[in-house]
Length: 234
Ligand SMILES: C[S@@+](CC[C@H](N)C(=O)[O-])C[C@H]1O[C@@H](n2cnc3c(N)ncnc32)[C@H](O)[C@@H]1O
Image 1 (tube, protein in one colour):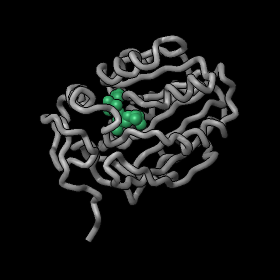
Image 2 (spheres, rainbow, N blue to C red):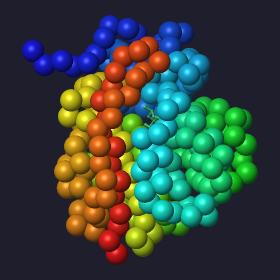
Image 3 (cartoon, rainbow, N blue to C red):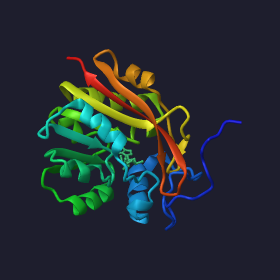
Image 4 (cartoon, rainbow, N blue to C red):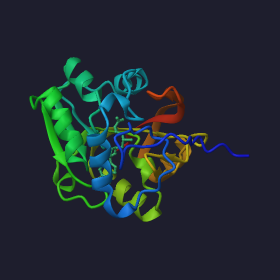
């Protein structure tokens, strides 16, 4: 039988239990902003099912880009990730953290401050602000794209991405891989391998590096990701 990698532990959307990224609870797609705001309100961030402190797979790819510290880097669906803290510590000084959840970004801003970071609350699927930013040198997505299960939403996402990458710019996508869980945070996910991501990005992007990575959740459960770095060829 196929393993869905879902357990019965519950998420924190309606309770005070920590969000374990493993809920069987089905969440309406109608109010995703409220869904994510509640996830970040109802759980300490270090208990969230996607919280991580080992950023080595991400930095392996960031360092591979060879970008300078002045490069513009956007982390979309950043939530309250410590990736921003670590990028600042390493001296990157043109960062954008964007998310649909204002709660998540406020948590992040209260932790890292707003020096060298711009915070943009926006919905990737109905962008009002991201659509207006200047092109970026690096687009980083960890565990966001895989929530877009419908082709039209994936197309909206990739059209926005493609319009926002500077000449010879980079894209890092870290999503559940084909062996990964089928749900996260009560939401269905769409799983990828590097070839599928390449197909979505099209011929203007070349794959630089990809690897599978097993992420250990705060609960101790494992989640299978594929990390991929692409570069725009023009
Ligand atoms: C599983 S969390 C990952 C957070 C962060 N990237 C990390 O690795 O810690 C998914 C994030 O995507 C954000 N998100 C989901 N749908 C979104 C959308 N349509 N537009 C912008 N952000 C979205 C959520 O608010 C949440 O912060």
